[in-house]
Amino acid sequence: MGCWGMGDETLGVLEGAEAVVAAGRHVRVDGDAVQAVVEGALAGSEGLPRFRAPRWRDGHNFPGPGGVPSVNFLLAQDAVNFCFWGDPPWRVTYRGRVHSGYRGLVAALRRALEVGCPLDDAAYLAHLSADDLEFILRGEGRLPLLRERLENLREVGRVLQERYGGRGERLVEAAGGSAVALVRLLAAEFRSFDDRARYDGLEVPFYKRAQLCVADLYGAYGGQGLGSFGDLDRLTAFADYELPRVLRHLGILRYSPELAAAVDGRRLLPAGSPEEVEIRAATVVAVERLRRALAECGMHLRAFEVDWILWDWCQEHPPAAPAHRTLTIYY
Image (tube, rainbow, N blue to C red; front, side, top):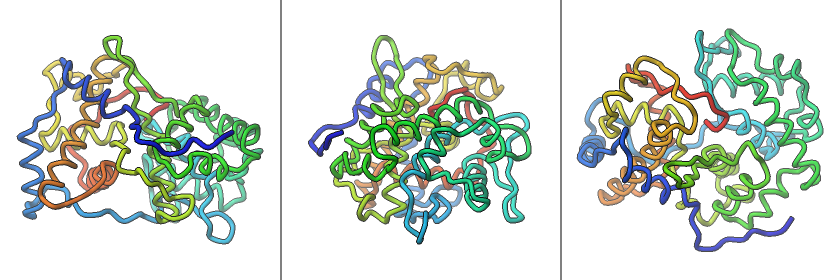
């Protein structure tokens, strides 16, 4: 275990995504729509997101003993933060309210902590049983890919025990204050965070959950201490299934008729298929173009902050068209 340090490198996510979009056959990014959305939003037009610096929400992370955020817990949370769609949708009731999707996961993990499940303990995670995970994630309906979630949590616990003395803080410190280095370290140490695809022979990294974990650390620690990174501007959007849904609703992503029919018909898109990789790549590129257009208008946000704004807006104003459906552990 050494210090990865901070250099001038990028993750290669934006570069790979740009290459896919340039060659894409199924998805394109509408530059005119990007400009129209930015101008309309900044003018206060109804039905558009409000692009302003987002605030970190308490519900995104859970403090450990003494109110100090737990890196181990954030790693565990992000290890199982994927693939929430299903028929019927999985829901969790917590403190009298019903939650679904990512917010359902947040509620389920908070509920588990409150009844004594030590989700921030590497040894507990390394030996987590299928029955315990079923108990933690109990709710209405059933989450897909439960076996894969169990494997991911065990991997987090095992790697932390074997290489970092059971302490996620040591892993974060090994990145030397670099967001890029920490994303690369997460992908190198944990198979479940190594999110890469192939497109026409090109390797396309996305690192969705690894990048999200870095942003979670930044938010949980208020940009201080373990949440302090000098190169957060090099993070990209987190290519998932909610962001392309809202970007398509805004007219920024344009699907081919065949892909639109498949998505709207809720047909499964195989993970790693050209269509699925193009959706993810176009999402990264579209958010970057939004970021640049906002900067030209004097609104300076980082790509992951634009992502947060769009994701939150999508939860409050869900588009009529569905998200694409792909069974994957990466988002």
